[in-house]
Length: 109
Image (cartoon, rainbow, N blue to C red):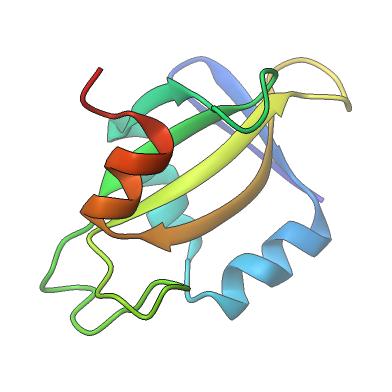
């Protein structure tokens, strides 16, 4: 398990999530940048979850694909109140495209 603090919030990542993030080619800097500079929205899929959505740098992620086989333009981190203590727990993260974001997460509202 790993913890770190960003903007006075303590974040927790389980070993399983760290492994999954590495499989998806997220590194720790990606995650910290997303949490620091991304925009947060309530999840339409889970009333207790929050989504932090970050626009990725095309130069750094050229050719990165989503699960839908489209070119990734954003990545999404899903988090909830930390069950291990104060702060928030990072649950998962994945790549998405603009269309997926607008449809599933109502970014425009």
